[in-house]
Length: 145
Image (tube, rainbow, N blue to C red; front, side, top):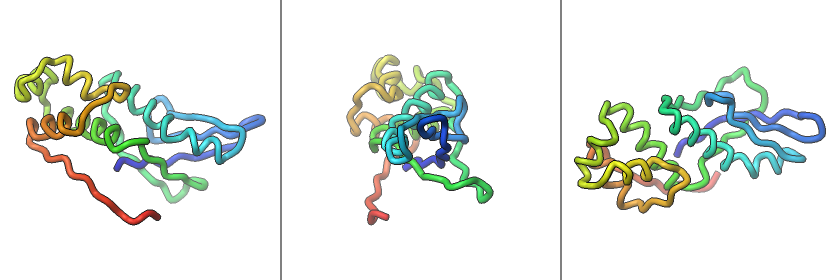
């Protein structure tokens, strides 16, 4: 699962959480640190969605030793994570969305929806998309930290 570092800083009467590794400086806020952290997964989702809408590369998360206290934040769902990874794999493959659609036997608009974090997609469709570009979707279960 994609997990990005975030820093929280006091900002006026509340706290602001910032994802420094992402373009546009994805951020959220809260009256206290706990509230800012509760909003963080959705803020990460929104920031990554914007990067994808603009057609930009999604930077890999970097945890720097010199940073203040860092909180690691993951996307809210495995489907969101799969969509972001599909976007990254599609860009890396050099294929256009229309070519992916042809390989999958679907319309290009359906590929657009597979890459839209605001659209509900079935995991089976994502698996087909990965297969069409020579990848395999794998899930993993781990003990909670």
